[in-house]
Length: 328
Image (cartoon, rainbow, N blue to C red; front, side, top):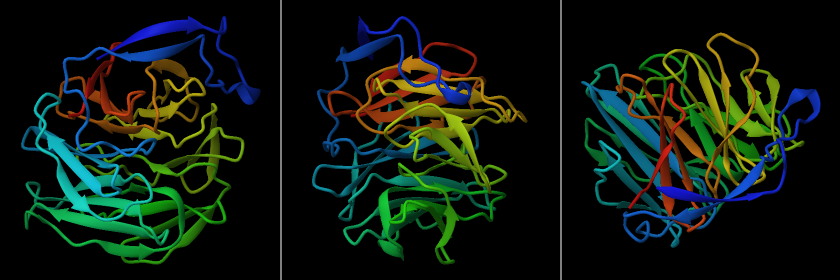
């Protein structure tokens, strides 16, 4: 886990226009590695790039797949049924020019699910690979075309028949969208970061499309068919998950490089306001609910730490404690 050395720089958090909290906290906390975990994440992650994660819950068993670009620009995945039981890394190849985004969706037959991972290739197009539980193998890399700035985001909406919907920041800085079988469509906006889709929790899709990104003002904005300003200030893409209760949890790396969190209650339109979780992030965060079968549910956030390793933070819903561990 991390221990934190505090250096106070402000007496209180600042409040921006329209009541949005600017993500500059009361202190800058510098992460110092104090862990019995392995000395480094192996293979070594490429610096500064967001990891991806997908989760699945079937027959009471939860699993998570983590994806990241390693320093040789190929894609690595590591998975486990528990935070202390990681499997060995698997090299999925490719030549990546962004971090990955991933999603696992349950099939109509619950014991089978498909996992997709998306990234930007050297041609700036979106490329993906698919893993089928029924086949037990990864399909070859395939291109979805387009031209993206930064990493893609992915979401699904609806029941088991739902497929992934991919979003990118286009070269015109607008949000662009496509399914696996359709073409690219602009959804407008003026983005200052890669987009991040609301995660599928335990392989179950949210009811509707929900995407987050930084706007031209570097605040977090939400797209649900129209754009809405959430607020805050960041330099990298946010991440979001929805609890089974309907609560939406939003995460961002603040201007102090710490993890910040905002919450929207089930059925509410307004957000409660940003609060500081802590840590020292050197990438955008990725978020998931894992394990989803835990009685209180567990928020999970992945990011690169100040040491360049991949870290996973976990918080049982209803508690204030976050536990951090290194992904080997």
